[in-house]
Every structure is written in C-alpha cells, then in structure tokens.
Length: 388
Image (cartoon, rainbow, N blue to C red):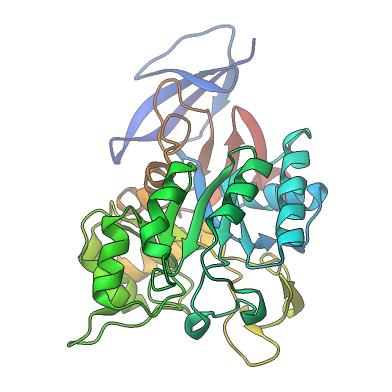
C-alpha cells in the first residue's frame, strides 16, 4: 500500500487555491483537509507551491519527434513522457485522416502501449480527426483520403479499439452526417464539428442531434458574417457546446481568444495544443500523418502550400499564454485545461478535479504559474528541479 501526503502548499479546489493537505493511497486521492497526520505516508513538501489537477490535452498529433499517425508503442510512450513535462496527465492521440490500414495500425499501437509500463502521462484513448470532413476546409487533411459518411467504418474502428475511440471530428454538411451523429454517440464517441463550411442552420441541426464541441474554433471553418453566422456563429451562440481553442498566438489573435471566452464563458472552452511531432524540438522538417511539414520560428506549415499544420504548442505554454492574453488569474483559467475536457469526455470520475476518489494526478505550479512537477496516479513523472 502506497500513501503520500502533500502538504505546505495551496490546493486548487472549488475554483480557488486553499491551504490544504492532500492524502493519496495507491494512486487515488484518499483525503483532503486543513491538517492531515499520517505517519505511514511519504511526506511531499510543496514548499508553498500550487497543487492543481493535471492537465488534459484532447487534441494532439504528437510531440518530441513522434507522430501519432506513424508512431509505434514506444513512440506513444515518448509523447506521454513529454506531455508529463508540461503538466499533462492525460491525452488523446489525434489520428489525422489516413488510410483504413494506417488508422487500424494506430489503434493497434495504442492497444500495445496500454500493456506497457508507463513513465509519463496516460493516453486516455483516440480522437479521430476525420475522415468525414469538408474538402473546402480540409486544412492539413489529405484531400484524397477524405470520405463521405461511413458509420460501418467507425464501428469497425471502435471494435478494434475496444471502445477507446472517445472523440471524433466531423463536418456536418457532409450528406447524411448530421442525421448519423446519434449513431456515433451510441458507439460511446463524443462528437465535435469542424473542418467545415456548414451554414448556421446545418450547424444548429448537428448540435441538436448531439454534437457537443467545435474543433479548433475559428480555424478550418467558415467564419461568422453578419448576414450568415455559419458554423462559427452557431457554436459561439450555443450555451452547451464546448469550443476548443489553440492559444499559441498564431491560430487565434489574443483579442479573438478574449472574445470567445467572453461569449462562451470559462466553463465551455477547452484549451488544446493541436501539437505535432515538432513540439519540444527545434525548427526543421517534420511529418504530420502523410504530410511534410516545415517549422519556422515555431510555426508549423505544410511544405507544399504553406497551410498551417497543427502547432508546436504545449499545455504549460497554453496556460501561460491564456494568462497573458486575458489578464485573468490562473485559478479562473485552469478549468480550460482540467475539468472542461474531463466533462466533455465523461471522465470526471478520474480526471479534472482534486477530490476524493479521483486519480492522484496533479500538476505543481511555481509562483510564476510554470509547471514544476507532475504526478500521475501518485507517481512523480516530472520534476524541473531534477532536470537541472
């Protein structure tokens, strides 16, 4: 039986930092209080730093030289370890639109990863970004691999993944796609709309049928016009839909970030990285699925035509950017990286909060709001001090 006592710090609960102690047992939170005494527990002195729920990244294509579409299980573990260095405790592997054979290979690599011993973040499952996407708003998606709606294909993928495909991005204007959103939901897959030129009414119909999120809001989608609100207007207006945002200062202007937050509220926005294998590495040439990508000054673009292709953003940097863009305190912004993604994916029983019986998966932030340590189910998987 492994027990830990985190003390002498500020613990994030109820959207504020409080001087509390946290007791863990076998990787789960066993108790929280102003004073806890447990002689059997390993004592972890937070030294006045802030203990928060670990971050969740539900849209990432890779990092540290590993591409989700091409990685083997060891590659997924490399991504997991890099994620941990950024305060991330859980992530979805976002599979860019690819062939059926390669998508199934990604699923098999993920299943093999699950059987390994892990030293980083938890790979929570798979996000399919496509293949049912608009050619007009394909972004970095290979047009030759885009498809019309094909629910039997997703059923095959979900069987292969043993139920671990948790999230899919679709374009609601694809013929029959909006009507089939309930079928995707019945498979246990949360549905986002994006890569889309859908008009307002079509987007509203998709939301009515169960779509609960917008993929990288404002990017690869038809923009709001005063006479034609389009998909962007529909997702901004709706009180229930979650909006992914990429806060690297490139995909969205800081003013746009502030506008989305003001429109949606802090409880319906999810900060994602949309990172590629170049995250954490220098400028150079990389891959994103079948695409060749060039990174210059940290900005990732397709080699063929200069279209932006994911990012080199990390969750730790996203939190710093959000604070800089908005002027809001960290305690107001943390839900974008913790409880909001957990709510969208139905994982609040494990992630997103510091509460009893949740996983003991934490980020420790210093006085500047930077990630100093990361714990996954009670295991310290990153320490900035140890790296020095």
